[in-house]
Image (tube, rainbow over all chains, first blue to last red; front, side, top):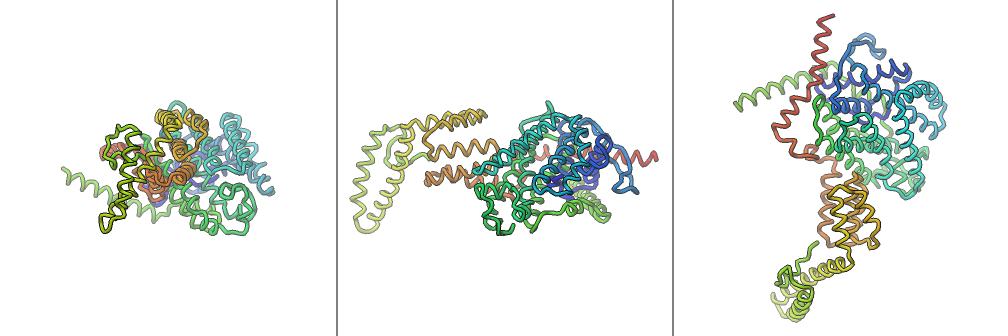
Amino acid sequence: MFGYVLPVQEKLKNQEYALYNAFYCGICLDIKDRLGEFARLATGFDMTFFAILLSDITAQNVEFRVCKCIGNPLHKKSVVCRNTLMDTVADISVILAYYKIQDDIQDNESIKSKFVAKLFRKAYIKARTSSPQVDLLIRQSLQNLENLQKDNDISIDRLSHPFGELIKQLTILVAGDKTSDNLERLCYNIGKFVYLIDALDDLSEDIKKGTFNAFLHTLSSGCPEIFDKMTKSQVLDKHGTEIEFAINSTINMCISGFNSLDFSQSYSLLKNIIHLGLRKKLSQILSSKGKLKKSQTSRDMRRTKAQFRDSEKIQNSQSVSTIDEATTVD
Amino acid sequence: MESNIYKLLGLPNTAMPEEVENAYTFENAKLSEERFKSGIEGNEAARKLNDLNIEYRMYKDNQNQKQQGGNTGFEEVDRLIKSDNIDAAQSLLDGMMDRNGEWHYMQSIIFYKRDWISECRKHLNMAINLDPTNQKYKNALDKLDQVVGNGQANAQNFGSQARYSNNQSDYRRGQTDQLCNCLLCYCILSSCCR
């Protein structure tokens, strides 16, 4: 879907990489089994993070199975088995993707989006039937956002609030009594981060097409026409400090919420995403001229055989040094 | 910011406003005469007079705020923020008509509590514009820029520090790989059974 909350692949240990993929494929196959083949396109990195985080927080009994996948039919993969949490995450992925397509249709009236929306509709209705509360929360938050976008004198915090609040409410819904202030803080800021980074990523496109952009709207007090003849880098030259401050502070608030939580299953994988992944994504988007390509993000997440071997070597040398340290201490 | 006027005038912190006024008038007159002396003595008197006037202005500002009931209102806002009653603090602040530096400072704290950091920064800047000599506002803005909004800040320093003692991180490291290990065991078992 958005693909902004993901780990730094090079820093993952092999088993963390495998675990991440097991969750990603788990969501994809969950969608396939329950909501239909086509809706698998809604599987995304952001929701994979959400599934790993909430599986850990709710101490979910995660089970694995081995299966083949249409994406790579020659190799069997370990994937996370279906459970109630994975089902809900799959529903959230499909419902969010459906509304994102609707938003695209509103923005540019493209035939492609309309066609995709038609194909998604069946899966969306199934997901809505199985998780009506999720649908309600998403619809309400998008409505709030639409109302706020009409306000010319609005701050970036106020504008990104509905999406942060949405992810927070979805967290409360999934985590139930395992929710906590720090978890909600983390997820609220993850929501804000996705909204802000998406706006930054879309900056050049929105200038060209004249479509709504949160940063252009707030920086110009509702008169984004002043940016019409500017490029993304010119906007960043002029307002980069404010934009970077808004996103960096949101990332640091995520980190703060994360550091105050206790984990029992996937701490280092989640730490990679929160401590490193969010900042890396920001720097990638700041340094790219146009919008980041989805295929690039997917390529970044793929690990070659050579990388597998390198990672193994690093881990072995680390474990040797740990043994050395332990011996020295003794 | 608290004024150092008592120290400059050699008075105890408990001195009454009248005592401060009298001592200030006396000291001001004395230094005003002395600054015309030649050499180091005159320069020293001029410097002291300048310091005295800055501190006196700050003292008077604080006194004015107290007279307008501003400070007591802010104390209540502060109390509500500390007890995590953010909505009540906001509505109390909304009801205040005199929006001085302290008002914007309090508003910035409320925004900070809500994780609205850009708004927090905006109000700190407003507080500084209204009261440029206030060191408390400047320190808060510096911290916000150097730590909270800094993309290079050390991620380990955010949140609860206590969790990052060595033992705790070892304990965490031990637990973190639990699910990875599960997956590993599962892979080994399933390949053995095949």
